[in-house]
Image (cartoon, rainbow, N blue to C red; front, side, top):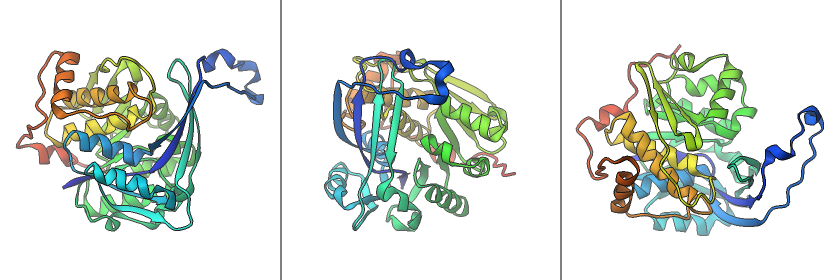
Length: 332
């Protein structure tokens, strides 16, 4: 059984700005923003949230499959993913289409401004879970064509498959009803602190209100770690140290992959969140979202150095399957 990673498969152009965006913003002129940043570096990398999720899951030993649409120019990328043990039976290359491409500028504080060309991703609504040969333990519904996200949520709900709702940068394009539809019955709703606050503002529901819909609400805070809210309380987890801090792009996707792996393997929420933090730290230390690698023994040693406790990635508890299922669903 695999985790189905959905969302974009893309090429990322990463631009590094050796300054701070905040120093160039004039609040009283916010209605006429016209900014230009001279960047020091531009790199083209493999990326896209579906590939980022799946790559981390695969490194940790969790079978992973990608369900996405990409262009003809992604044929080599697909082979690269398959060579790393990722099921790409559901990665559909569309004739005459160009693969989605992102342009992200990052400043010294890790803040990001991104422009995104959807390309073949915008046709992802044409495929559903039946397009992949993989059977699923869970589905991560990442930012994608909005109709694809809604289709996947509906199919997960119909098939009673746990899903992670990670709307991320598609939030501005979604109505409050569409956002809540993704939350309704979800196993996990996840976002960084800005994204979760945007969900609160758009839907009028705070964390407690979202927990009427979902089993778990996860908020990431970068260097400040993460918070996981459930109906029985909340858990906080620190970030794992990263050195050097080269590029935060993709760290959140690795966190999501690590968290899902930890929960599906039967670990406590706190331990799963710490696994997620270590997975994210590896990304930050490299330029590009899936340019890093590690052996499981190396990951365990780093976890021990970061948190002072042991980790056995080969251990899967007898309650793993139970933990993977939504608890006491409420679907208003």
